Structure formats: structure tokens, C-alpha cells
Image 1 (spheres, rainbow, N blue to C red):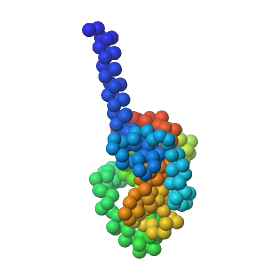
Image 2: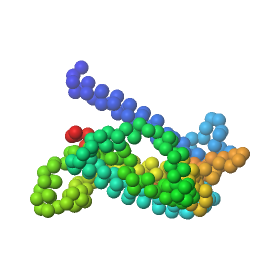
Image 3: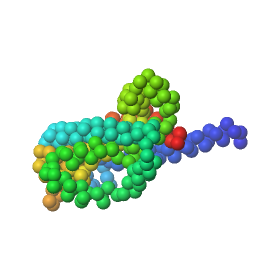
Image 4: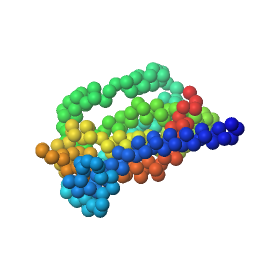
Length: 279
């Protein structure tokens, strides 16, 4: 067998394998959409009805207006927007300090920051709740927003620090000769070059905060302040679940994540692949 034919067979097997994996990952979304288009009596039929005939598109409208999802959407957008601002600013600033500045104990503090990655988030829930409760911030958005303005998370700091390492230090030296301060170097010189890594951090943050259920559930009691994930739980009644409405609302909630990922995937992939090139 010639090398060209062998490469063709290998590529065919490779793409077939990728196609199978893609189908496995896409199938839950497909099942979500088809379930949303079925009447209740057809959801659990055996054999299953893969493509409803006719599709009931009105279920999406019913699901959205069955609960105050417009309010949930505004709340989620407000929280996610402030979280993005806090995470992008503070994590990039801390990463700049770890990557470009020399100060006593820098490497030790960076090691401590990385060690926090091994601490499960569930461990800090009770101490944080006690702190925010004593500050009178329960049933407000402060517990959902303020933590984003205190470092932005160890993983984001590590990701951005590694990207800073790929940028030549000559930029800093030239800026200092021109009279720039450390903050001006960070804000005017390096930050504009960090777009791919910042896009990756923004996508991770958006996905995490947009889909967050546990933290808002702990701190928010007023339904007028609920986020979209909390609103989805409204379709689970005491003795039944409105599955078609739940799947319709879940898909509408998932849609922004899909759109944002495909818009920013070029920056996302570049930011991930370049962060480990230089230590």
C-alpha cells in the first residue's frame, strides 16, 4: 500500500471518529430541542418519537411567558456583566504583577494562589455565607458580584500570567524609557495585546456565571431577583415536571452561550494554545 493511500485511510478513520464523538456530544442538545417541540403525552413514548410531527413551536413562547423570564434575563445579564468586568480587570492586573514585576515573595504568593485551585469551592460556601450574612448582603447581588473584584480566580490569573510571559519584556523597557508607570505599561501597552487570552477568560467566566445555580440559590430569596438557572427550577412542581416547557426554557437559556462561543472561538483557541509557550 502506497503512503498516499495509507494517509487517506488514516484521515478517513480520523474524521469518522471525530464525527461519532461530535454526534455523542450534540445528541443531548438535539434531544432537548425535540422534547421542547413535543406535547407532554409524546415525551416518554416507547419507541421514542425522534422528530415530532407537527412540531409545537408555541411551547417556546409559552415557556418564556409562563414565568417572568424577562426579569430573570435582566438579572442574569446584570450580574454576568459586572462579573466579567471584575474578573477581566482584577485577574489581568494580578497576573501582570506576577509576570512582569519583581517584588519580595512574588513566587511564594503565586504558588499559594495556585494551591487554592486544589480547594473545592464547596468548602468556602459556609464561611462566605456567614461573612455576607453579617454584612447584611443576603438576598442582594453583592455576594454574586463582589468576589469577582478580588483577584478574579486562581485559574484566570495563571492563564493570563502565562500569556504575559509570551510577550517580550522589551516592550516594558521601551515604555519605561518613555516615562510610563507600571500601570500605564499594563493598561496602554500590554493589555491591548492580551485580547486572545482575555477572550478565553471572558468565555470561561460567562459560561460559569451564566449557568451558576448553587450560589444564587443560597443568597437570593426574592423571586424578582432570580437568575435564569433559578427560573428554570420553577418548572419542577411538587408532583410533576413540565418537561417540554423546561427543555424549551433550557434551550433558550443555553442559546447565548452557543452564540458567544462561536463568535469568540478564534480568540478562545488562540488564547488557550499560546498560554504555555514560555515559562
